[in-house]
Length: 459
Image (cartoon, rainbow, N blue to C red; front, top):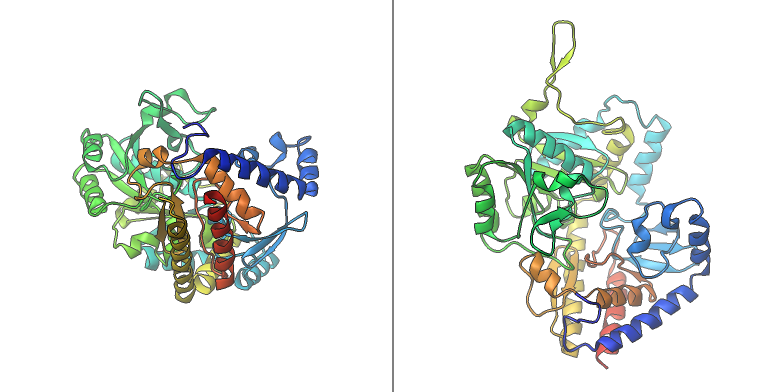
């Protein structure tokens, strides 16, 4: 969709561009030190940043962070932000929480990596089993890697190669997950650098489309359906229609396909994520980001039957047999395990989830009231601590509907407007999330900036 094609006919595209140009200029003028660091970084890093895509994520200079505490971070130019993106939810526990600092410092002092297990791994596995209802667990350093390992094990269990994803997904930067529909509807690699035949390993269907899901599984060649319980990367949020998860579970069982739920983003709704909240029964669950307070960590849980294929066999001379392609030198390291243990037992408590739920509802209610007050035909969604907006009156049901009502220029205006007022909600396609240390004052700050923008847009 061209930048000038606004989803909302009640917003003047010329006004959007005028405001965005003004706000971009203000941000650049107020961040000279960030500009200096970006220029210096270009001599030693592609695009001047440690991950090349960071520059493309913004129309403005990326802030270079100096420090952070609680809900706020400060950049090298001295600007402080109340963070509602929380590093794409990886910092849901907030910055520098005391239990995490204590656990990490203690573990570092006693050794942080051994390529051997520590007792924390048992405590973490027992707690994850209690939260998500799956008895066996393995560990990586990210949810992307956890998804990769879950796929490999599913191939061994089923004897099949293909995986099925839902259109509009994001499950990490590994080959099979980076497939999308091209202009003619055929599957194509999503980005450069992927093997040309990657599309032969992946099926893609719309979320909430039971009939298309059934047709895709009918050939019984799909090893695994990998899905978020609610889709979180579609310029908003796509919730399952009534009965969709029941149909998904029924169809996968009937066709001998395993079902994995990626809770990396949705785990913020409560202990056990949406798996527990909605009573879902997947074969595997994958986790990452905030479950260890932002310390690199990934986990995947599985049934006892699936775990059987990981049991090592040894030959007569002790040689290892029947290996599955899982594991990494730093996976399951002592530091990550200590962080996960402290995070789950001392930070992600029932009281913490209750407070973020309360504040998330306050945020959504306030955003909705502001939209209604100025008469914009936008839908405000809400899921636990998360809110957001869709530029049409009704919630979207699949990625096609999300794309049809998206407006990148307007979304980027919202981001830069809030940033210039001390509120960070950076990633296009996400939405504000209330973190564990957040307070009413943080929500008030977001709503003040949001209301001011809506008034400026409709004035």
